[in-house]
Length: 262
Ligand SMILES: [Fe+2]
Image 1 (cartoon, protein in one colour):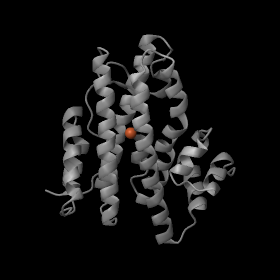
Image 2 (spheres, helix red, strand yellow; image 1 turned 45 degrees about the horizontal axis):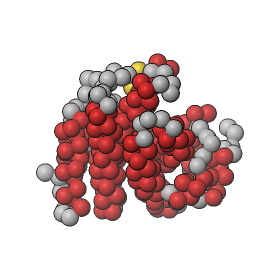
Image 3 (cartoon, helix red, strand yellow; image 1 turned 30 degrees about the horizontal axis):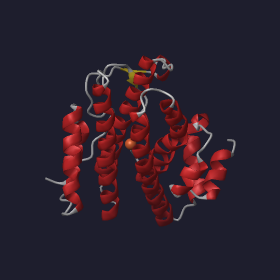
Image 4 (tube, protein in one colour; image 1 turned 45 degrees about the vertical axis):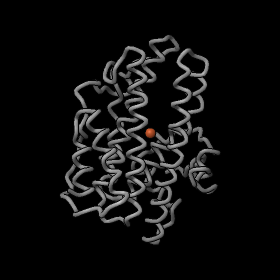
């Protein structure tokens, strides 16, 4: 076995509990040789259960502040964390030429994402629901497909745009749960938020490592990639404090707030 082969097995695994177990298994590679390389295949969609049914953003369930609306919110976050496990596994499996520390970092991210998913899945079950009970967003994997051609592009856009967006929006989501009867979510969101700062930090570290290695400017390259892959979908407002904690520079935050027009 090798880290790359086992990450692939976890990535294509359809059953959420098995995926979590296979992901936790990868922690053994923190202490041992990563093993041999493994064939890299395109991945139009990762392993996932039949339910939830994936629908376009516009068709996603409307979520109000009713009990059911809040449970649908929990389900939506649970689905994001399920996808985050796959994103971390793909970061390991797809890019097999990075320094050893890169894999140690992403194994840690994958295991924390599986912890987040399990916390939310278990909470849904406590509330009498299951992961898969409601429709979910179909677009979350697309950025992984779009960035599968280069680890620099992946590091630029998945942790630093998609995951970092979580840092921007969590405080307002947390407030909504504080005011609801689902206060257990506040504790879960606090765990997720702390861990996600670390994940974005890891993304920033490897993005800047790669920019340095290739002799390209981090902000200018980010600008080019934003224009190519994100365009007007770059959403603020940005959580400056959390982004600084995740090692975004002031220049990058300044860029995000005032991206150059095409
Ligand atoms: Fe997460």
